[in-house]
Length: 616
Image (cartoon, rainbow, N blue to C red; front, side, top):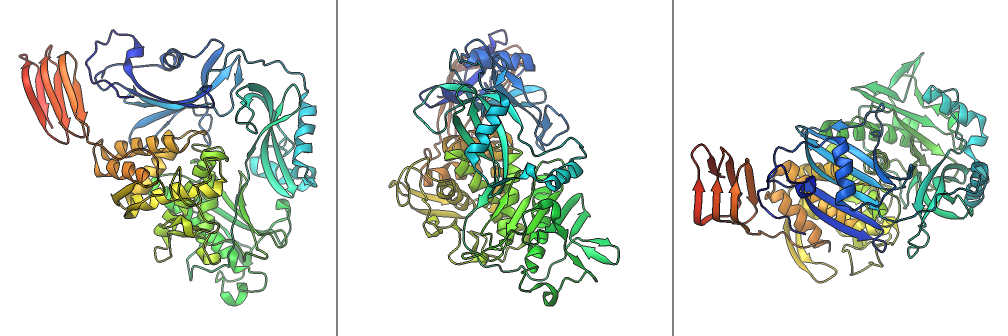
């Protein structure tokens, strides 16, 4: 939907302030939106009350719904945060009759106390039945029955004691916690009904998994499962990153893999091929020279050195490139647990820490730099956009972890094959971002068609190849024809710019339900924020999405600014030409025409005494 470039009086209703783009999902009940303030209105200040009222009016929200401001994740109860460009960010969730709607997620931005934009997902389902029949205890039983594990982590006293020790909370426990929410049935995409449900955190120990399980509060049926513990799936043999400096801690007459320097807190523990985190021990050395003669052994102990150094480098990357203080942006300790279980062919982030198996039939120890960065990347996503780990948002979640694996390698070890993920732990690599068709297993490189495209709800490790390839093209450039027959020719902008665009889109604009179309919108907006509206970077972001089948190519559109009386400071921008006709600037106002192309004054253009006119 194109926004009209027209001067309006401030006294007009707030509803006239926004340019709006809406996207419908799930039979028009779940919707996503993107609002930006009309550039011709420059003096409007909206309070939080104004914002929530405006959202309700503009989105035609039925009664009994409200948008509620949320605490920033990872903060000490802060309700807003300010970024390096001066934007202040708030996050809202939608509630129905006082009950939170799961995955409703709205982001609002201000600059210099002025509203700038808002985007997110919301629902418009009328008359949701919120009556509860099932007890909390019965719902937890249903969730445990669904998971069907042999053992659960709260059944182990040592695990609960570990949680108490790191949270300084004597009441802390891994026992399932529940809350009442409104959610949809994720197992049936045709079901448009919204249900009241218990959202229950279930952490299983054998086999290892952690999920939010959504139990219908009336019938006890399982409506949805959202994984918290995120896995890397692949095959590999471990290689090391050579001789590196690592941060350690002196402990008695020895040293251990705990480093606390440069605002960085990194701890690496030995699970001793067990599954009890509380029983984990320190890796120690008597002279702080962790040599291959000591640690390159049958137990693969030198893999712990990769995990420790890789975690340090990942922290340093996010702090030095993006100003982010650990995964939660609040200085959380980064804990790695190595030698998990026996013959464990995986690595994962469980919402609190990184865990690495020694491998078995397809893997050696899974602690290469790219795997470490990938797992911590899931923590970054959890504490920012919180992308749901299924469907398109799940594919984006996986892709961002691969993108950070590329960026961390480029930062800390640029001589590695940075566009391959898992290449140091086996052949063929898990992911090939240069050519996703060569990933193992193969991935599509185009949304909507071509080799290996099976639909938008393919596995998260399948469709992640699309955004992976987008980031490669954006960084390096490429020409060719994609899987749906569209020819493209994109000049790369370099990783240093591409990574900043990706990070800003993830942490500022994306929400839990972001899909590929929204990802395109948000990365374009991030590029505009950082580099300007008609910049080569915006062109690169747009055309790289076109190359992977998402959206149209960048277009230099012409703006016609006709029949206007300008009475407040106004800026008209265009990535093409601006045509001006029948325009008068009055009352001391300033009109700025900012065109990448030509400003054409056709006829009847007047600037009153005391007013100003500028062409940029």
